[in-house]
Image 1 (cartoon, rainbow, N blue to C red):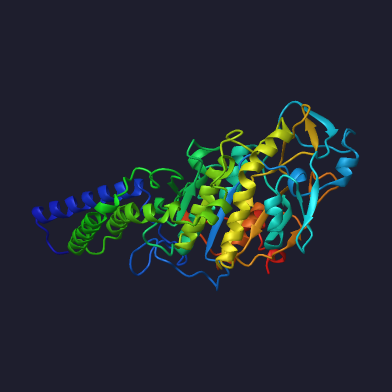
Image 2 (image 1 turned 180 degrees about the vertical axis):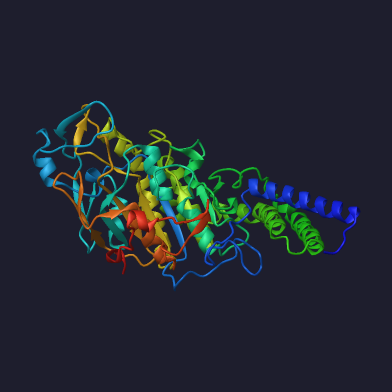
Length: 482
């Protein structure tokens, strides 16, 4: 063993403490990747950039996802899944057992008060409340046989977003960013657009990166005012100066990196700060909706008070995926409530209110993506966390139902004009070609070129997966694919 002086020993020890301190800071920020992570989604590349674009396990049909999260539980039998027998026997007792969530339920069948109409060449049926979505029926894949694991909003939202009912796990958008990075290095890979007035159920928890590095969590963008929270956008006359400052910062960072080679954690921290600087310029220009034509703004309903807020978020989402963002998540208006689809009472007025706000912008997004040639490789997912019961709660409401709900998919290689699965005669339970939430996740990952059984992150000594196929039995639903 070579002798070592006390000076050298102390210097070595000091460097060790310094490294530990840096690791602690970066660990708190979520910038340390787990050891033993598989190559796909390792969060690093030859460049050391955790958000650099990466290929999947096989050729992808889609490159991005827009999730229209309909918080509260849209009523399938009043929107997407007409039930003539339910209407015929409305007012009679339900012949079987029904799992309820709230007190006040009556075991009495409640027929839908809304008319249904067939749309397009597919003959897909939609409620009179959502005629604009009916207008793009031939571009939609309607899944009527969804089910989930819990009938309480926070738990069901966790399931929808993370694959499990309990909190603390990474959202699906985080997993996708971890696997594939992003195509635009001036913007986050996962962007969240919510009502500027506040948060829906569970708030920020539903776009958390969990125990994945924090670089993969959802980043909130404002739908009005400054687009990036906590960043003051540069004014047009200041942009040249801001760009010069950014270049100087990059040069200083490169100088510092050269003096400390091989410290990937330091690189991650620097990249985070540089991304913030780039966003200050890029996001402001990108989300300036005044650049859109009058016709496009009217298409999304920006000229009408009821649809302007949600329409702006949908239009922003189109611009973001057009610019290379990997995953965009849109939350509904906080009107008539922070759970706007939660129709325990006032079924007719409540559904009319929320449908009047989201129907036109949702359909406009799909139409606009298609006319721009973007729908081929962008997946649009329109879904709530669960459905509603066929019996009445109070005099005119429906309680939560985890056993059946409907959702819409468009683009990204999903079958257009296709209706998948069936519920029973009253719409209470999915009975044919059932699709669980893990199956949905597996299928979306598949369209992005990702094998859900191989996408993993080592956490607490074991490889964690979004779909946890050994437990859930998750599978790719081939019948949904073109």
